[in-house]
Length: 191
Figure (tube, rainbow, N blue to C red):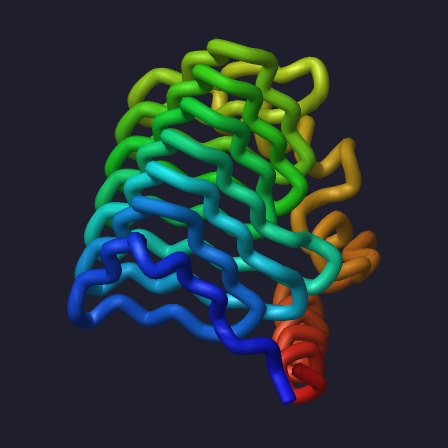
C-alpha cells in the first residue's frame, strides 16, 4: 500500500489541492487551491513556512526525491520535479525545475525560467525571465541561445537518458517516445 501524506496540523491546505502518496508537509506551510503535490516513485518533503501557490505542481519521480526547504516560495503554475530546493529560494510563476537540480539558498528563478536536469545553482543564483540554467557549473542561456543549450544538453546525454535511462542515440523520435511512455507507465503501475 502506498504511503499516505504526513501533513503538519498547522499547515494550511486550500480546498482543491491534491496531495497524494509519500508526501510530508511541514509546519505553517501553505498549499494553494489547485496545487498538486504527489509522489511518483520517490518521496516529496516540503519544509516549514513555505508557500506553494495556486496550480503549482510538486512531484517526485523514480530515483528522484523532491525536497523543498523552509521559507521557499513556489509561484502559481510553477513545476518542480525531483529536485532539491534549499531554504529561502523563490520560483516565480511558470518557473520549471527539473530532475536532479539542486538550488542553494537565495536562488531566484524568474517568470517562465527553467532550471534543467542535473543543474547545480550556487547560493543566490539568479535566472532571469525566460532564461534556462543548466550544468555544473551552472550556465545561464538567453532565449537567443536555445540551440546552444540543446546541443549542450544532448552532449550531456539528454533529458530522456538522464531521467529514464533510455539511450536515444540513433532512435527516431517516435521510438524514443514509445519507449518513454512504456517506461513511465510501468513505473506508475508498479507504484
